[in-house]
Length: 99
Image (cartoon, rainbow, N blue to C red; front, side):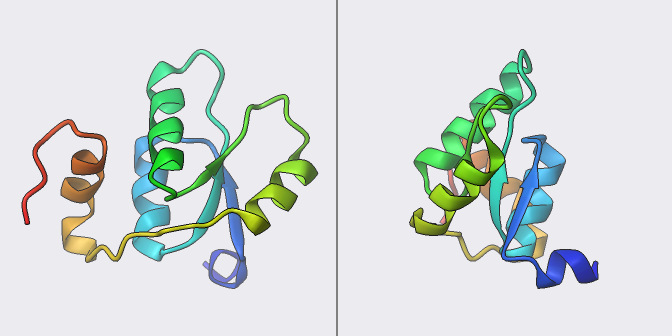
């Protein structure tokens, strides 16, 4: 918990639960989808397009990704923890977003 709290960036796989936790914490992230895991690849791409995360491939050099992430314009959403799943699903356009 202390490491997460004090970190500027979290480097992680792009699993759904991990993404929900990162967004709830409001942390800048670098998501590295597991090759061949189409749901992780889709999720990382979609969240990158919305500027909620930076993403790179597994074979990319992590120092290059960190450097690019420092200049990436993050637009993290303000999400109440009670509404995180609905917000992420709406972002993925799997359900209509409720205002």
